[in-house]
Amino acid sequence: MLDVQQKAFQACLQSFVEANNKRVDKMVREHARYVADLRLSLQYTQRELDEMKMTIHSQSDGLSNTTRDVEQVTCAQREMEHGIDYVENQTRRNNLRIDGVAEIAAENWADAEAIVRKSFTTALKLPEAQANAIRIERAHRTGPSSTGRGSSRTRIETASCKPLARRNRVASS
Image (cartoon, rainbow, N blue to C red):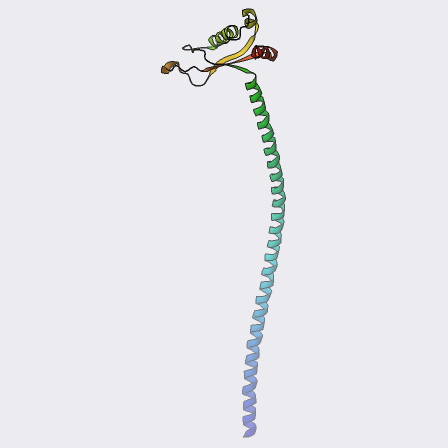
Protein backbone atom coordinates (compact mmCIF):
# COMPACT_ATOMS: atom_id res chain seq x y z
CA MET A 1 0.00 0.00 0.00
CA LEU A 2 2.82 2.35 0.69
CA ASP A 3 4.14 1.49 -2.72
CA VAL A 4 0.83 2.45 -4.36
CA GLN A 5 0.70 5.67 -2.41
CA GLN A 6 4.26 6.44 -3.36
CA LYS A 7 3.53 5.85 -7.08
CA ALA A 8 0.34 7.91 -6.89
CA PHE A 9 2.22 10.71 -5.15
CA GLN A 10 5.01 10.56 -7.75
CA ALA A 11 2.46 10.59 -10.59
CA CYS A 12 0.66 13.54 -9.02
CA LEU A 13 3.92 15.36 -8.41
CA GLN A 14 5.15 14.60 -11.94
CA SER A 15 1.92 15.86 -13.52
CA PHE A 16 2.14 18.99 -11.35
CA VAL A 17 5.78 19.58 -12.40
CA GLU A 18 4.96 18.95 -16.09
CA ALA A 19 2.02 21.36 -15.93
CA ASN A 20 4.21 23.98 -14.28
CA ASN A 21 6.98 23.35 -16.82
CA LYS A 22 4.51 23.76 -19.72
CA ARG A 23 3.15 26.93 -18.18
CA VAL A 24 6.66 28.33 -17.57
CA ASP A 25 7.78 27.30 -21.09
CA LYS A 26 4.72 29.04 -22.54
CA MET A 27 5.47 32.18 -20.50
CA VAL A 28 9.13 32.08 -21.59
CA ARG A 29 8.11 31.78 -25.26
CA GLU A 30 5.62 34.65 -24.87
CA HIS A 31 8.23 36.81 -23.17
CA ALA A 32 10.81 35.87 -25.82
CA ARG A 33 8.33 36.94 -28.54
CA TYR A 34 7.57 40.12 -26.59
CA VAL A 35 11.30 40.88 -26.24
CA ALA A 36 11.83 40.17 -29.96
CA ASP A 37 8.95 42.51 -30.81
CA LEU A 38 10.44 45.16 -28.53
CA ARG A 39 13.83 44.75 -30.24
CA LEU A 40 12.22 45.18 -33.67
CA SER A 41 10.29 48.20 -32.43
CA LEU A 42 13.45 49.64 -30.89
CA GLN A 43 15.38 49.09 -34.15
CA TYR A 44 12.58 50.75 -36.11
CA THR A 45 12.45 53.64 -33.63
CA GLN A 46 16.24 53.95 -33.69
CA ARG A 47 16.17 54.06 -37.51
CA GLU A 48 13.47 56.77 -37.41
CA LEU A 49 15.50 58.69 -34.84
CA ASP A 50 18.61 58.49 -37.03
CA GLU A 51 16.60 59.70 -40.04
CA MET A 52 15.21 62.59 -37.99
CA LYS A 53 18.72 63.49 -36.82
CA MET A 54 19.91 63.56 -40.45
CA THR A 55 16.90 65.68 -41.44
CA ILE A 56 17.49 68.08 -38.55
CA HIS A 57 21.18 68.29 -39.45
CA SER A 58 20.44 69.07 -43.10
CA GLN A 59 17.75 71.59 -42.12
CA SER A 60 20.18 73.16 -39.66
CA ASP A 61 22.70 73.61 -42.48
CA GLY A 62 19.99 75.09 -44.69
CA LEU A 63 18.87 77.37 -41.87
CA SER A 64 22.38 78.64 -41.26
CA ASN A 65 22.75 79.32 -45.01
CA THR A 66 19.40 81.12 -45.02
CA THR A 67 20.38 83.10 -41.92
CA ARG A 68 23.64 84.11 -43.58
CA ASP A 69 21.73 85.17 -46.72
CA VAL A 70 19.24 87.19 -44.65
CA GLU A 71 22.12 88.92 -42.84
CA GLN A 72 23.76 89.77 -46.17
CA VAL A 73 20.49 91.12 -47.58
CA THR A 74 19.89 93.13 -44.39
CA CYS A 75 23.40 94.57 -44.59
CA ALA A 76 22.91 95.44 -48.28
CA GLN A 77 19.55 97.04 -47.43
CA ARG A 78 21.17 99.17 -44.71
CA GLU A 79 23.86 100.28 -47.16
CA MET A 80 21.21 101.17 -49.76
CA GLU A 81 19.16 103.08 -47.18
CA HIS A 82 22.30 104.96 -46.16
CA GLY A 83 23.02 105.75 -49.83
CA ILE A 84 19.45 106.90 -50.41
CA ASP A 85 19.56 109.08 -47.29
CA TYR A 86 22.89 110.52 -48.41
CA VAL A 87 21.55 111.37 -51.89
CA GLU A 88 18.35 112.84 -50.42
CA ASN A 89 20.29 114.94 -47.92
CA GLN A 90 22.71 116.03 -50.65
CA THR A 91 19.72 117.11 -52.75
CA ARG A 92 18.32 119.05 -49.82
CA ARG A 93 21.67 120.76 -49.26
CA ASN A 94 21.62 121.91 -52.87
CA ASN A 95 18.22 123.60 -52.43
CA LEU A 96 17.77 127.30 -51.78
CA ARG A 97 14.98 128.12 -49.33
CA ILE A 98 13.28 131.50 -49.54
CA ASP A 99 10.98 132.47 -46.68
CA GLY A 100 8.57 135.36 -46.18
CA VAL A 101 7.30 135.70 -49.76
CA ALA A 102 3.52 136.12 -49.99
CA GLU A 103 1.68 133.28 -51.66
CA ILE A 104 -0.40 133.76 -54.82
CA ALA A 105 -3.70 131.90 -55.24
CA ALA A 106 -3.32 128.98 -57.72
CA GLU A 107 0.44 129.52 -57.87
CA ASN A 108 2.16 127.44 -60.58
CA TRP A 109 5.77 126.62 -61.44
CA ALA A 110 6.26 129.73 -63.57
CA ASP A 111 5.00 131.94 -60.71
CA ALA A 112 7.34 130.18 -58.27
CA GLU A 113 10.28 130.66 -60.66
CA ALA A 114 9.45 134.37 -61.02
CA ILE A 115 9.31 134.74 -57.22
CA VAL A 116 12.74 133.08 -56.90
CA ARG A 117 14.28 135.30 -59.62
CA LYS A 118 12.77 138.41 -58.02
CA SER A 119 14.19 137.43 -54.62
CA PHE A 120 17.65 137.05 -56.27
CA THR A 121 17.52 140.69 -57.38
CA THR A 122 15.77 142.22 -54.35
CA ALA A 123 17.01 140.26 -51.34
CA LEU A 124 20.42 139.12 -52.64
CA LYS A 125 21.12 142.29 -54.70
CA LEU A 126 22.19 140.34 -57.79
CA PRO A 127 22.09 142.20 -61.10
CA GLU A 128 19.00 141.28 -63.09
CA ALA A 129 21.08 139.86 -65.97
CA GLN A 130 22.93 137.56 -63.59
CA ALA A 131 19.70 136.51 -61.83
CA ASN A 132 18.10 135.70 -65.20
CA ALA A 133 21.19 133.70 -66.27
CA ILE A 134 20.82 131.28 -63.36
CA ARG A 135 19.18 128.06 -64.50
CA ILE A 136 16.47 127.09 -62.02
CA GLU A 137 15.79 123.37 -62.19
CA ARG A 138 12.67 123.52 -60.04
CA ALA A 139 10.85 125.91 -57.73
CA HIS A 140 7.92 125.10 -55.49
CA ARG A 141 6.34 125.76 -52.10
CA THR A 142 6.62 123.29 -49.22
CA GLY A 143 3.90 122.50 -46.71
CA PRO A 144 0.11 122.73 -46.90
CA SER A 145 -1.42 125.61 -48.83
CA SER A 146 -2.72 128.55 -46.82
CA THR A 147 -4.43 130.55 -49.61
CA GLY A 148 -7.96 129.12 -49.27
CA ARG A 149 -8.03 129.23 -45.47
CA GLY A 150 -7.60 132.94 -44.88
CA SER A 151 -4.28 132.31 -43.15
CA SER A 152 -1.58 134.97 -43.27
CA ARG A 153 1.17 132.39 -42.86
CA THR A 154 3.55 132.06 -45.81
CA ARG A 155 5.02 128.82 -47.03
CA ILE A 156 8.71 128.44 -47.79
CA GLU A 157 9.69 128.62 -51.45
CA THR A 158 12.27 125.95 -52.35
CA ALA A 159 14.41 126.28 -55.48
CA SER A 160 17.11 124.10 -56.97
CA CYS A 161 19.66 125.84 -59.18
CA LYS A 162 21.92 124.10 -61.66
CA PRO A 163 24.86 123.96 -62.05
CA LEU A 164 26.04 123.72 -58.46
CA ALA A 165 28.70 126.45 -58.86
CA ARG A 166 25.95 128.99 -59.62
CA ARG A 167 23.96 127.85 -56.61
CA ASN A 168 27.03 128.35 -54.44
CA ARG A 169 27.56 131.84 -55.92
CA VAL A 170 23.94 132.74 -55.18
CA ALA A 171 24.14 131.30 -51.67
CA SER A 172 27.38 133.13 -50.89
CA SER A 173 26.03 136.53 -52.08
